[in-house]
Length: 350
Image (cartoon, rainbow, N blue to C red; front, top):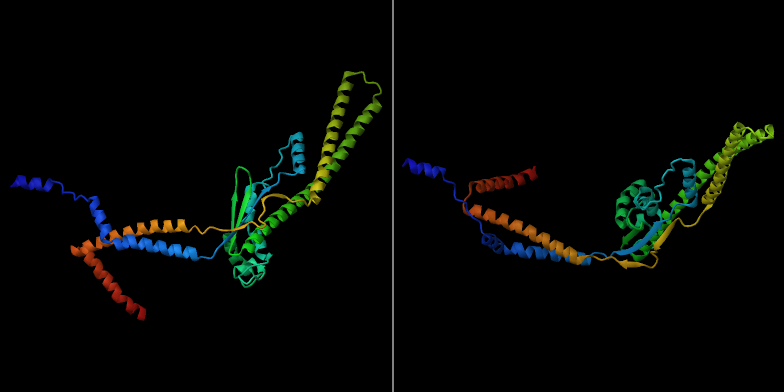
């Protein structure tokens, strides 16, 4: 008797194996949920996608121009003087991509006027297109910024440095005009930046040029005075001193000439009004319907719906088994749900 008790108490409990057929039986039992529900969800998604308003896409691509000749001359002059030239990151493609997403740029785009902003063909701003009543109200502009960000899609090619801008609106003409206006704003910004840099460079170089001229004149006067005092140069010490004065004159003269050339380039940059970006893809008359991606959306809805339906089927099977076996936990769960359901009408009436 004792041996039987010890063996029964120490023996492991039998493990119930769950075969693949049990899972398939669950799916077949709840086939309406597993198969019909995902198809219905996919059908609804496909219907909504096909009936959604058609979006029209306008694509514009551009590349920032290389640093101007004035900046190149500045780097050469800095290298000649042994000074580390500052790097200019305002011509990098990523800078222009960030500029297209900046608040100042988006506000200018919002307040610009376009020929078509609604179905009736009326003209107006993007605020009118987005349904904002007050055109210049700051609250309307702040609320419209996230919406206009959804219209613009910017990408940067890290290999070629080309920035691509895509504009999506329900109106072909509006998409084209927004893309053209974006290029205009980028070019205006770049022109103002280049002219401002040229003006600042001109003012700085003018001061440096005057200082270099004074130093050159002083070095030339020192050399002329030395020659006036020493008609014949025979001593080695005197020759060394003369060579030192001549090197000082040559160095200051070279610096003066470089600064004079740099000043001319800065003056040119200050008044330059040529385009500051290179347009690689013009959006004019290049508007196309944007794909709705109905097949991809439908397939994704079918896959996700099937996964959710399988989960619901197994949960339903679990509750059905618990109800059949009169599981205590399941019965307690039903009692609590019934209590909550009875308490809800009282809570609403109060």
